[in-house]
View 1 (cartoon, rainbow, N blue to C red):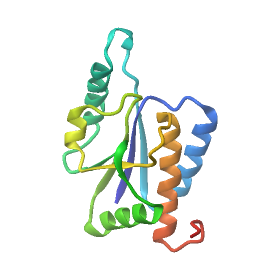
View 2: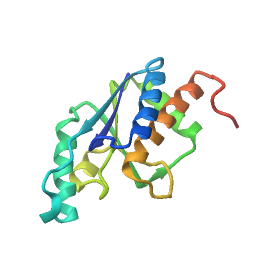
View 3: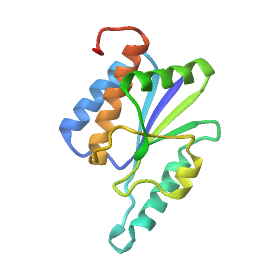
Length: 157
């Protein structure tokens, strides 16, 4: 299975990027993983939040193939424990999902078009986080999920 983390904008903070790269390297032992950071929408000062979401949505949709299974990370999504998340990822592996795409939107969230394309919407927390920090949280959770799937000693109950 391939896993993709699709994000709007580049990771700006060096400390976040270092953490992301560390988990990306670790994930390579378990799954083919790709992180795609799409360019920010330009000239947003004259655009409404809705217009920004729609432009970002078009960028996201261009990078999702017809057979991809799309999961959005959104504060309004369904919550789960790390064990439940690992079970869901494992189910995709067993079902033969070829590419599991996880998307992190921009600061205003996702357009309706992207929401309609998604098969699932998950929440990492009921708290609100900066979308750049969410990337690192996703990476850590992906790594945690694979250690749970493999029965390794990273996750503690």
